[in-house]
Length: 380
Image 1 (tube, rainbow, N blue to C red):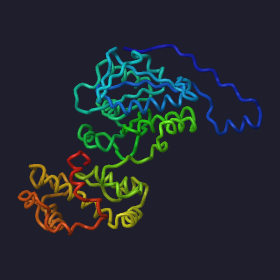
Image 2: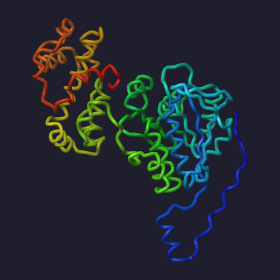
Image 3: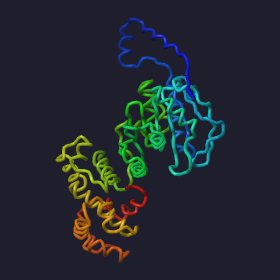
Image 4: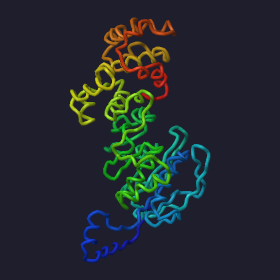
């Protein structure tokens, strides 16, 4: 179904009085624009926190004081049917509008939730999103909304941003698509994807700043008692391995390593991603973690291999490839050098590894048993 309507361009804004003050103010304040308008589509079992933080940021920026009037921006929960939409926590939400002309919105956001829980979108919703894409309306995927946009073919040749928790799931389902999990959200043309959670508030603030100005974007975070507005380049909060360092570039490097255990990146590639030279990255690792990035990377892969040996029935050769080694013989030599015994011996023992003190030194707590448990929680 096509959604068509004739539109009249907004009248040109009136100029300020020709005073020095008015001219100076125009330099530093955005011109008053039409309200920011966002349509929201909720997938079955959507994440309630992503919706509430996204919408409340819009609400608090839309009006002065605490009246919640949608003056500066407005939003609508869109759905093809009138039935309530159940969130992953059981709270149900009603739509506020049937599908309308997509051109009425500056953005249409899809908020996802649990990944593997039945059908996510009906045919009418898919058709509506494709119609919006044809009309060049900006589309947003929040939480696993990026999966939904990808599944219906609207993220081809685009980069997606997902939570570190779902990074491996995305890679397995969409092996030919670019994806990152080292930032809060990503903008690729008229497609925006967001990791979800609290990042939904940061994305909403970014949209508000673009349309209504910086001070308006900061206000909701103050009211919601959020620490600060994080930017598009801010790093996602990480799983336990990265908690021992506060250096943003090291944390991002660690996350990139975690995400590429079976297909290891060149250290030079990691450095280039962080806008560093290889030598600069090595100096940072030496200062922060007292080891080289290549050594740290190898330890990560060997620890992951150890987890696979003790928790799966895969062959040693399969595990060698899964942990990024070229062949079983090379893997066995590296494993024995680190752990003091060949990988084949691990299957016979569920206890501590012999000679575990031979693992290259890193800060206490950074590569302890906690890391091994993380492998089973999809961190990798």
